Image (cartoon, rainbow, N blue to C red; front, side, top):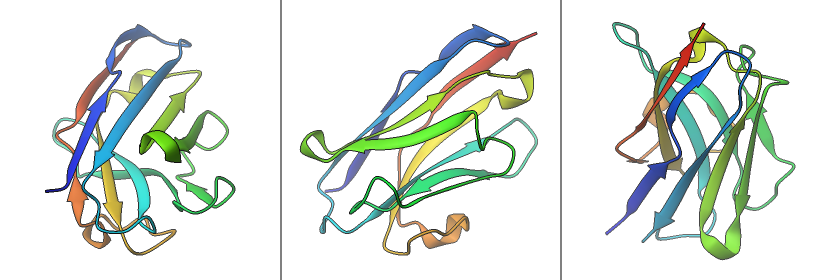
Length: 124
């Protein structure tokens, strides 16, 4: 059974940093791409970042977070991270971890497995 468990969300002020974690277990292959999405109230789920499982340099970011957020992973721990710096109130959302076989895709429909989400709230 595949499980993706996010953690690290919370309430911070604008300009602060947070690091989200996603612990993965039960994935049938080590070649899964991992991604972060977010969903704010009343809005559609939005792509944030993705990383190929095989190389830490194969990453792709949404324009709204590029330069502020960094996706990385620890293969030994089967964990993916999202380092979020210079947070803005518009970054407030539930953040979801996802896994899929298609690399470098921002389409949520291409991801097979999803976590339960972790809330990030940025106050101004």
